[in-house]
Length: 97
Image 1 (cartoon, helix red, strand yellow):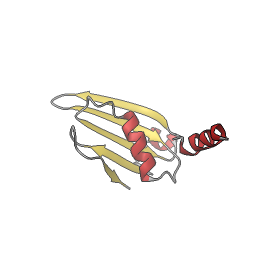
Image 2: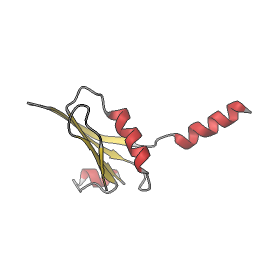
Image 3: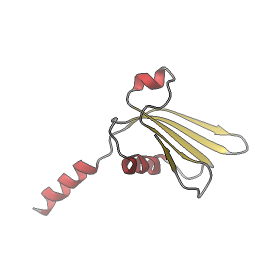
Image 4: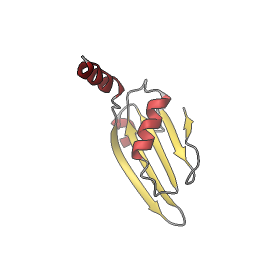
């Protein structure tokens, strides 16, 4: 019984996303940019989990633009779901919708 419940919980909390593109810039500050496709109704908590998974920690700044489709990324459109950013090491992550 416990194994079935554990499997069900894992399925419900699985984060579905696809990294379409990543850019890394190294100048005075190390910056990392991601372009990610997620379902349109993805909640902030899930976006933060994805951010934490992709934030490799050695960068000064990390920004992730979340889109509904990879076409939006290819056409250089503004984010359609949200933008999450950390502007410095140890700084909080901001969510912009």
